[in-house]
Image 1 (cartoon, rainbow, N blue to C red):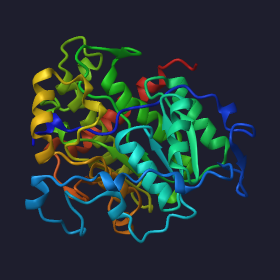
Image 2: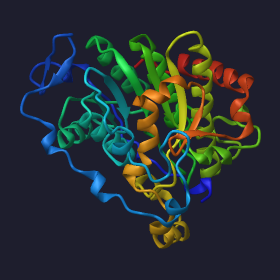
Image 3: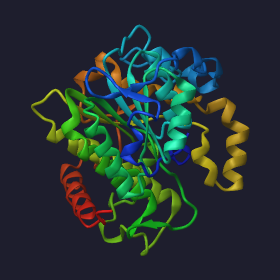
Length: 362
């Protein structure tokens, strides 16, 4: 299946008031000064998405990789037997699709999960549905003030992060849209997460992990990789090409962050979740939607399968030894050649810093 159909959890983020994470909102400080879910909201309320796994023809013919997992593995399977008690993991886009499944499985394994969505209401609804030790926050990735508020809320709560799972995103917008003069997919998928992750680096534990949800669609990025002379999209825009550019940016960000982590136990990796039918494909044209509906049961991954790779890279002990890699089907894969261009990644980081520095303070 080509990268044009690569889908993942629908982006759901938005503005957050740090005052929402104080007594009276369903949270109380724990012994470490951080917020915790009020008593009485246990894992028994979790929905068992593992029962919704379907078997595609493709997975019947694709063997598992060196990790012991593969195309058909689910998020529950890659975490089976693991205890995440004492771990704190932040997941963006927690209220639907892969983010929702990652939230559920990580909480099921005992982690305290900070789930972000476009609005606090959506984040709370997602966390309530899952139960366990969850903390809802809003983080609208296209709104710098919201991202900064989310960062400050985590810092103010004194939360140390064992992993940041950058799952949220938008895909293949049919018409050019912008945020602060930058094409919206690039701003939301890359700049928003760049702000979030760099803002939380001091909160990352000594062996913390950053996982960027890229996509096989990164191969659809322009031939020059990142169009630094057309970040606005005004010199030419194509929905899928610009989506691919944003996914290549996610990959390059992970690569550069891994280089900056060199000499530490911290890791940064990018992942391709697989081809999955989620709400992210709502902008597809009628022909593409028909094709998906017709052949989907034969080739598409289920949501539990799609969430497996990002969850594996975020928490599995074997993944702790790898940094600066691109994963697909829970195994290291090969991205397009310029994804390994250190100069391109460094330039993207520098340009991203300049964009962030020029954003309004509020």
